[in-house]
Every structure is written in structure tokens, then in C-alpha cells.
Length: 343
Length: 150
Picture 1: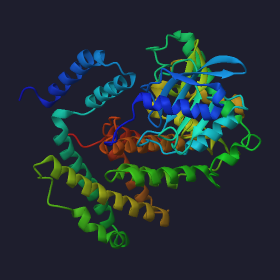
Picture 2: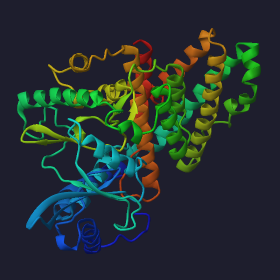
Picture 3: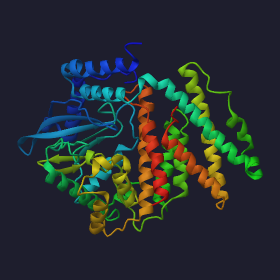
Picture 4: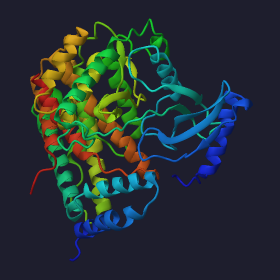
């Protein structure tokens, strides 16, 4: 933890109760119990807890989650942006977490923190695989895979102007592909510990093969995959992890979802990438250009590799999240380029 | 040599799983322990230095390929002339410590980044030079394949 002593759980609990008292009023008399740090979360620390307070004459219990910035985040995004985005999404059909409060500066809760409702369910990156870690059965896994496609379509159908989401997120300019590539090249500049010729060659290839801008800019989740959904009673209940959300090209999320590195996690016999894309087009009317998809698949893996290098820098700097060399992932980025050339 | 580095790490991973993890109460610490075990499994401990040496040799081969491509044409030769020293590089990967090899790898990687950047500029300014585009794809292919096997 970079040598900084962490405050005790009791101290954070007291800060949280004080924060809730200010948010709800003294009469609410909030009491926090069961605060602990969960094992999940790389860009934010997740601290589940329960809280009771008085509301209209009744004492009610709430299941909440404190999402806290770690000392060194793997992805550096403004939590205020994420908070405002999630607020706007509450008015849509997208199953997003319900956000309640934000301590953007960390003045009250010791680190920048947002408090959200804690939804029941479980997330598992291998949820669609044959190992079936959540016990959904073959039919259940296929239904979840199809539901994921529907949720992505729902997300891309959100009217970013009517909902005000367009005001909350950065304008990607004339070509979202150029914008995203520039963003992740900057991240690479900032975080690489040693020169990365493979990623630089990939970036140059990407720069020379930008797809045409999309007909319509959409809300891109940025990390849309089975690992980031909660499954409750066998069904998708909430889409999590919005740190990478941005305005952009819908094929951005499709490239991420269908990237070769995720192929075994996201697809199964009877639900192949072509099935996913066909269904997506049926739901959205968006025809997916194979060359654009190939571009976004390479950029997605480039982005993953840069995120891995960011984790390596944090680990070498003393973070408590162990990281192995990213060589194998970088080789996968490069292996996708010849395939994209032929797309 | 027994245990080999790989045997040591494998044994440590087993102890972490069978002895330490069941005794850890914190959900967060258990998750980190599982990550530690996974990270330890991702390195070829017995061959790390040998692999690094092969990487250095692979990077030198790529730099030589760029040099040969540049020297094939007077205009290219002139445009890439100041890279010649980098491409020729140090005498050879005869360093005896991991640290010295790693430094050499970083130096070669930096030279390749510079060459790749120059190559990108060349490709864009001379879109009809198919050989530059092909060279870039060959470099990408070599790096995707990993260091050459002995």
C-alpha cells in the first residue's frame, strides 16, 4: 500500500456514519454495520455494508456498497463523471447500479468515494463457460448470453442527448476511433516502465486503419462483458463497472466483447460471435462493418494491454495487486493485426 | 540443482493454497492470495534468463531486418541513416547477469520503438511503397510469435 497506514475499519465506519448523518439529517440516526473490503474491484475498492436509518417514521435497513478510489487506480477516470452518468441512466431501461452519494474529494471518507445500492447477485467472469460456476445450466447460460446482447443493444439505444448523458461525457470529436486511440496511446506514454515496440507498432497500424465514424455516437460501456454483470436468480440483474464509459462508436463495445482474448469466455457452441452480431443488428438496426469490427478488436486488446501495464507500474510501485509481465497479452494484440488486415 | 526455481515456486504455491489460504479470514486478503498464486504460475522460473536472452536476440534480428530494408534503397538508407548505430548496436548479448541482459533488452526495444515510429512516418508519406507496409506486418508477425526458439 505504498507505505501509507490504512485507517482501521472502525475509523472508516465512524466516518461513514458521520457522512450519512449529514446526508440524511440527524433525525435519521444512521447506523453502519458489517463494513468490510470485498475481494473484487481493480479500479475501485469495494466495501459492502448495511446501514439502518429512520425514514418517515420507520427504521429501514439498506444494503449499500462504498466504492472507493484505491491509492493507485488501474484506470484513472473521474468518479464524479461516473456518478453523474449513473444518475442519468436511472431514467433509462439500462440495468445500472443506483447511486446515492458522492464524496468526490475524499474529504469526508478519507478517499474519493461513491455510495451505491448493493444489489443481490454474483458476478463471475467464467459464468458462460462450461464450468458453469453459477450453476445456470446449459439453457440458463445460453439465455444469459442472449440477454447480454439485449442489454448492450439497450445501452446503445439510449438517446444521449435526450437523457443529458451527452453533457456529462467528453465529446469524442469527429472520429471516436481516433479519439480512443489517442487516449490509450497517452495512457501507454504515462504508464509503460520500459519501451514497448510491439504496442507502438500496433498503435501505428491502428492509426493507419481508422474506421469511418459511426452514423450515431452512442454511450459505450467500455468494459462490457459477463464478468461485469450481476446474476441473481439465474438472470442478469445489474451491469457493473462503468469507469471506462464514454461517448463513441457502438462497434467499440462490440470489438471488446468479441475480441479474440475473450472468445472462450463469451461464446459457446450455439452462440458464436456471428449469432451475437446478428442479434445485435436485429435489435439496433446497426450493421456491423467487418473491417471496423476488426479495428476495434485490435484496439480493445491494445487497451487491455495498456491496462495491464498500468497494473504492472502500480505493482512495481508498491500496490497490493500482484501483476505478471504482459508479454503474452501483447503478443495477442499483435496476432490480431494480420487477421484484421484480412478482414 | 534441487529444488529448481520452478519447483520452489510450485511448492510455495501449494503451501499458500493448502495451508495459508484456509487460515485467512479476510475476503480481500484471500482474493489477493489467489492472485499471487496465479501470478507466480505465469513465469517460467527455470528459464527466465534464457528467455530474456532469446528476446534480446529476437529484437536484434528485427533491427537488422529494418537496417537491411533501409539499405536496399538510397532514399531509405539516407532517411534511416541515423538509426544505423542503434541497429548495429552493442557487440552481442554476452551479458552474464539478468540485470545486464534486461538493460540490453530495454535499449534494443527503445531502438525498435524509434525505428517503428520512423517506419510509420515513411509509410504515410510514401503510401505506394508496399515494402514498408510489408516490413511493418513482418515485424508485427515476428513479435506476435515471441522470441525465437533455440
